[in-house]
Image (cartoon, rainbow, N blue to C red; front, side, top):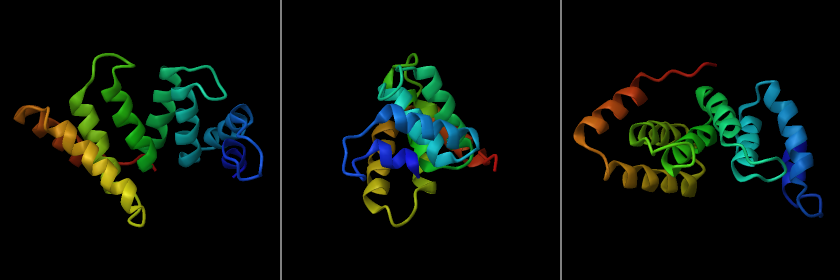
Length: 144
């Protein structure tokens, strides 16, 4: 994908995040969940675009609702960061747990990192919060 090439040094040049954002935007608008996640990350970090947490949340959510683990992990991180308001541990756990369930099995290190993140969150939650988060994750259905 062109966005990936410009966001990395795969072509032998320094990353061009602005050009990568242009191509991710085109693919994201067509519903490609991985591009939506990458575009969200650019908005979250301000690489190649003006930093915009609301726009990052929009694209993470769009990808996450399709079952894309990166979008789900991004939502979990954003809900826990304090950048969009007070941390919401129920939403953090819900999305982190869904990301654990949807990460491809061959991405062992990613899976382990997500499990560690989720377990750190659960240690801060009350039993009622845990029950609510588990129910939300259990009841969640992808849009695609």
